[in-house]
Image (cartoon, rainbow, N blue to C red; front, side, top):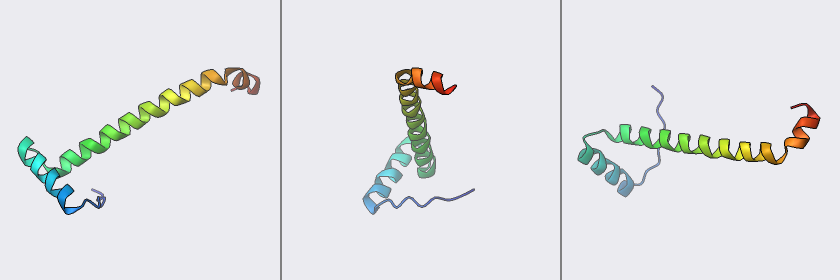
Length: 66
């Protein structure tokens, strides 16, 4: 497994540990879920923007042959 330093401050790390304890999960599992949530949200945001740009520039894309 690859490790990724998070750079959390002591208060942030303490809050993560407290939440993990309260939910019966590990801090690492919570952090991983948060990363996946962010990646999904960004993928969706980029997809929506790409579709918007494709619609806006459809005539140009057609002339270029896609």
